[in-house]
Length: 119
Image 1 (cartoon, one colour):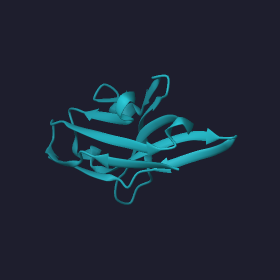
Image 2: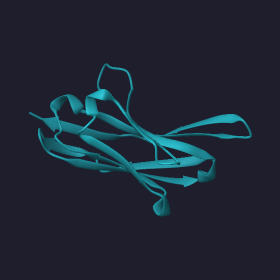
Image 3: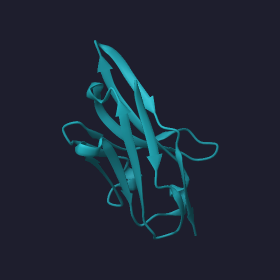
């Protein structure tokens, strides 16, 4: 089992910045990638950014150049630095971790943190 705890959400004005954190604990050695997804009211949960254990990153087109995902291995923590925030970035942001254990796929989610961007 892997537990994910997010923090750092809040209310910010358009153009502002926020940094989200996701601390992982438990069977971390089974995790190969972590990432952030977001879900706005009435919409599906969409990928924001991911980072592999090797440091390879991937971003949704809508956040490229504005958001940066990074990881601090010593703290088992992944960050999402969000800049130039827009009202359309408003959503619940979820941390995700994927991996495998004896060929069994693993997929974990955090509880989510609200990000609200006012215009």
